[in-house]
Image 1 (cartoon, rainbow, N blue to C red):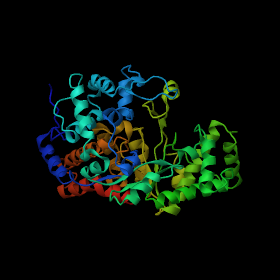
Image 2: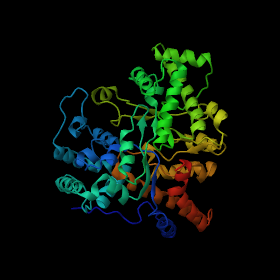
Image 3: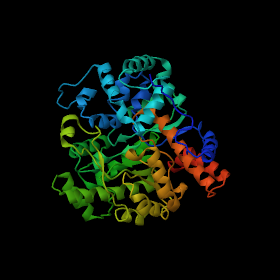
Image 4: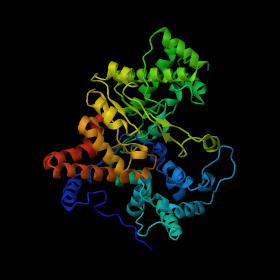
Length: 470
């Protein structure tokens, strides 16, 4: 069987001299604690510390990176165990699901998913042969047995991965019970929530009206009035902050921002509450509410994150059959210069405001985002996100953005994942990629070695900790 091997020089430059510099830099950051300031892990894992169910539930069914690529081979999502909204048939034989995944594992060659999964297989489960159809059962049985041991419980893995802080993401209506349970348990791990209010900021969300009513009931405010709505959002932010949150997150279709005042804001709110709005008015409401979120961040100190520019649920048939987050989200061209101008003109120089912007439109790195971050004190560039969370994507980001924005106008690395076991794999890749870039700059005599060593620590640990106020 072909061996599974993680080469010690993976992601480092091929040139022997530059590779040696990268090795030296990496040695200084390899064992640093992990700061995970934005992600989508389930807080229930750490609140209950229950064993993970089985290999498929942990590594396949919830991972949209895996689902999308196997689906591209013509494999129905039902056969990967994905639940249908109509409760129709889906594969429930876990080992059969795993075998189907293994049969298509060769399709992941060259992808970051392959890099992360191979790290997990080798480092977490101690597997030494490559995954394919012939080794599928061996893999399943070994992983399944390991998941039943104490060392693979969520809290034990948190410690083993050297995680210093891990942020989850919750909607505005989340009761945060699992975070309270963790706090009351006396566990010393730091898992904090992030405020994600998209469901009550976007009138085109299918449950917007229902969620608006629930927001009012939760806060005791009249959320059918604009002032009551704003107060309710401020109340929920305060609850999140009390539970340890240091950031908010917003996944809007575009980066549009706009400021409406007085009667204009109230009239638009009345229209969206009663469903009497056009798509253009929905966009204008979202744009106005991003301005309101920025204002609130200045007041309460929560770092504001924006993840725009994705056409969610591109395939309506998949959405209707399985619901969202099944791998059918597609990047779109995104304007930042004009879209963010109202927000940055109002808050971009406010010392109380930190604004982290992510993109899946790489064409904006050097043309728009880096020049903006190189001027506005509040703006920080988010790490290469989603489709660009890869060695090549990280390299392109550093090459296109750093010469204009500088390293310190970024937030280091953000793993942004719901795949808990892949967190150290992603940080390992990011640290290696950054050391490779810094090594090249040392070899080109653009940086001295001591400067590169300091930057390596900044990018791996310090900058994220500072930017997210951790």
